[in-house]
Amino acid sequence: GQALALRGIRKTYNLGLPTAVEVLRGVDLAIAPGEVVALVAPSGAGKSTLLHIAGLLDTPDEGQVQLNGTDMTRLGDRQRTLARRDLVGFVYQFHHLLPEFTALENIVLPQLAHGTPRKAAEDRARDLMDRVGVGPRALHRPAQLSGGEQQRVAFCRALANAPRLLLADEPTGNLDPDTSDRVFEALMVLVRSTGLAALIATHNLGLASRMDRVLRLDAGRVVPA
Ligand code: ADP
Ligand code: ADP
Image (cartoon, rainbow, N blue to C red):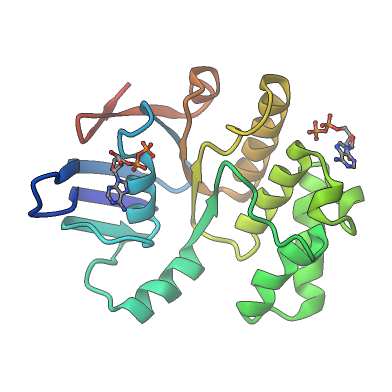
């Protein structure tokens, strides 16, 4: 099955009110396991809305969300939350790391919450950090890291519980262009080495062109770029 399949997704904010905004107007999209797909669109086009629906953080008004071949639209809230924790990793423009914990703990904690024993969780965290070059920063707190290092740690945290799908919203949008390039490369190394499927929203056409496929969000629909 597909890692992610969206069919006929529609979403309107303020449904029924005079100022209703129809953001998604029938989105169809499929991403195979291991495929890395860019989503390019101007600000306000609905990228965040689409990523939130794909990641089970929000529900569509109409349409179907399938993760790993399973229809998620029929699940109750509790089951949807569990499915999200198992299947989806999120990365945002800002790292959202917990400031009072070390980089290592930020990657270990979600695994403990998931039932992984501490030793295994630490081993996995260190392995992920080594792959993106932040191994030596394991015991630093987020404020002691550069912006690029903070994002690398956030990538590791997103992958901590071995999700099937990575959803990233402008993952390097907060960094200067040179750093952005290197940090994006680190993200690709991580994604490729785990065989993960990824949907990555970006304004950066240079970065988008390095992914397997580029899609555009246009007038509420997803089309090839
Ligand atoms: P993007 O991520 O592409 O910038 P968003 O998905 O954040 O776009 O927003 C798409 C449109 O939906 C915008 O016009 C935005 O103002 C509107 N919107 C987003 N979230 C809400 C909300 N919770 N309530 C009302 N309107 C919203
Ligand atoms: P990156 O390319 O990973 O963003 P930079 O080029 O910004 O890294 O930073 C180079 C080095 O300087 C990094 O190893 C980082 O640890 C250190 N550094 C940058 N900013 C800070 C900071 N605010 N506090 C402590 N060390 C920092």
